[in-house]
Length: 263
Image 1 (cartoon, rainbow, N blue to C red):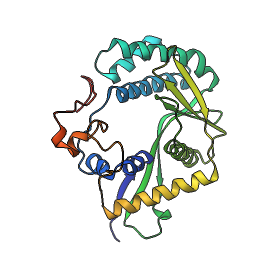
Image 2 (image 1 turned 30 degrees about the vertical axis):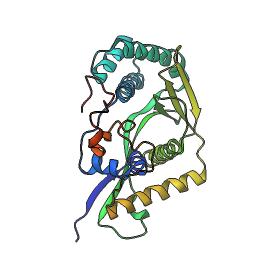
Image 3 (image 1 turned 90 degrees about the vertical axis):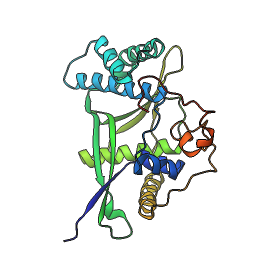
């Protein structure tokens, strides 16, 4: 019997490859660490704090506010009064005005796996496993996804929504009744949290699977060219690998990161 290998892929990997195949190659194949921006660190820390809050609710406990702030601080890393102030405002607003309308948590930061090998139009000894993480699914089958960014819904957001819906279907053998993307607008003052209801159509599901199957095809061909047509292909605008791709500009560019970031 031929030996099988497993390759784990995600919709975010597909998006990264679509933006720039060479960036995907540096990050996923060569595994060169990328610069973590302060905004990304803030988003990761907010996810961690909200996950802790939701796990407490799932067990019937409302955790102390200071414990949530401590979780945020631990994940964020470097002390920063400005970002901690923003985090406190967001957590307070979420607990008081958003959480009561979402229902009791059922799944919190739950990872799912979908074997998509049988969908490929060819035989493969590599089993391709689609994976992702569900931010929150409540007992009344409401799916929520957190985005700590400005409220701009893109086609990549729609593809992520399809991925999460497919993940819930696979785990629970049932589709969510409602699904929303929760936009936490970190720059707004007062803090703004917007619920944007996902509107996934049949054509979106078809496009999602076309993208994932096409992505697997690219990985099998192992061609990773720079996307020089992208406006992001410049050391000043590519904070992750700009100075790797453009070493001649390394002295001109200072990536935006903070002391707690891993570079």
